[in-house]
Image (cartoon, rainbow, N blue to C red; front, side, top):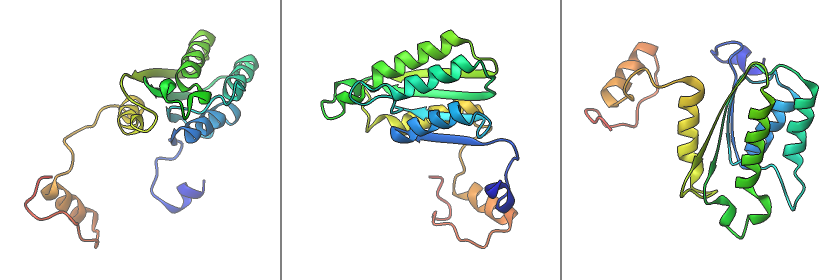
Length: 173
């Protein structure tokens, strides 16, 4: 409501994106306040620490409630995350697979879930490509080419913006 009152939005269409602890928080919001957002991009969610699978338990509790969940959720993880000794106690990959299997098996009404693993990506490298894929999975593909400088200037002028572009005129990058 705060954002809807102050900015032009599509009322009722709210998205959340998070990586690592932010991904874990997104799942917490999904399972404890299911009407808060309707699109989620969850990357390498924190679900466990030192064999305490707190995120899995939260999902199990929600599933046991048999509530409807009207949301599009994209979940992703880097294929190499489990092998980094600095974060091995988080078990990002194995918990991701367990959570995915749990959610798919529950057949939650209204939930559209897509999951993706990015082979060769680590906890640090996965988020940019995963967020990009998540936007496409939850919002659909782009309607047109990205804005180049000439398109940006036309868009800016049409919108009545007084902010100057930092892109050089005539450049398409």
